[in-house]
Image 1 (cartoon, rainbow, N blue to C red):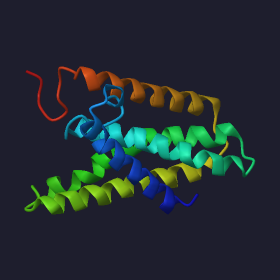
Image 2 (cartoon, rainbow, N blue to C red; image 1 turned 90 degrees about the horizontal axis):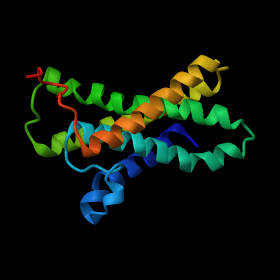
Image 3 (cartoon, rainbow, N blue to C red; image 1 turned 120 degrees about the vertical axis):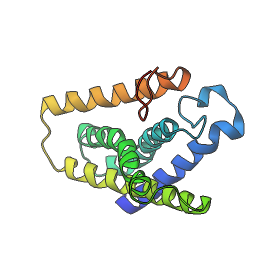
Image 4 (cartoon, rainbow, N blue to C red; image 1 turned 90 degrees about the vertical axis):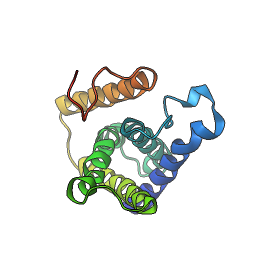
Length: 169
């Protein structure tokens, strides 16, 4: 699957996860879908959407007779990086220009950044596929993806006492 097409599939999953819980109110979707418009919820949606797009991609990859490990480790790493790519790139506008003057501009920027993050994940995984990955790196990636999944689920139900942008009281 091309990186451009995978990023589009990722954006579709991201959109589904963005509205899935609001439209259905199905409680089992809450750990994966956005429950509000917070930064955290968007990072969570990006993580799960990237994993879902990788699941769609797997049957195509498998036909190429590559190893299971060379597929999943790069995608797990990308799934961990993609949310933070959204965070870093999206905040370029608030940091340099300030608040968006019109809401449609913010929406357009959010879609562009989300698509870009999918492209970035694709580039990372394609390069990692070509490398011989050490055991330590594989363990680190598995640790990071498991910690990410745990935090995205845990903080869906109980936010931590500290905010990313405010000093603790």
